[in-house]
Amino acid sequence: SFVADITDKTPPHHFEILLPVNAEISAVGFDAYTDDNGYPLTYEIYTADTEEGEYVLTKSGSFDRTNDAAALKSQFIDFGENISVRKLKFVFVTTVNNYAAMSEFRLYPSTENIAVTATAATGGIIYHNDKPVTGSISFPYGREITLKAVPEEGSVFKAWINPTTNKILSTDEEYIFT
Image (cartoon, rainbow, N blue to C red; front, side, top):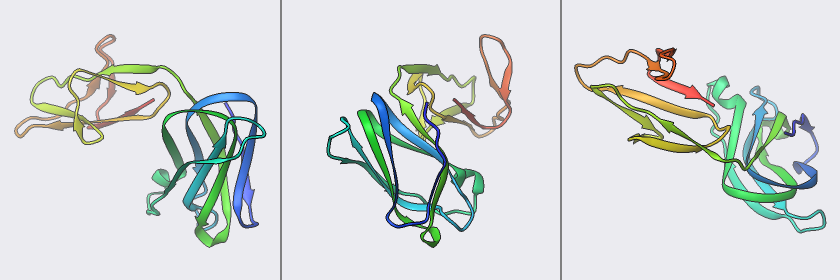
């Protein structure tokens, strides 16, 4: 696990990490400052698999600026594959007020998947990423997962229940867990 606080007031806004050994990672995450200073609007992530190696653009993207501070704060960037990394460079291409700031930058190691079985009792459908869930689905370990129960017409959602313990996990239709 790697955690860092970064503040950069000198363009180009970026930081670099050199790991003591190569690591297989599948994602990065960070907490963005949600005020009007330092929020990244677009980013580029470069990686190299040796200390002397040339950086290669691994991922680029953008963040939507909304009024939802909770949604803005914690950012997760999935590479979509496992990447061998010795060094990483995170570039803030554009930011709010030409100032870059973040805290708790995290590297997510490549790990085994976990299987989740979600079964609607009767009168409803369970969704993940707007797709119906049927039977078991696998997710990389440590990732935040959101499931949503949608009751059919005439049915009412009651709760998410752990079938092993019979414990109520949540009474909200949307259930988020790691």
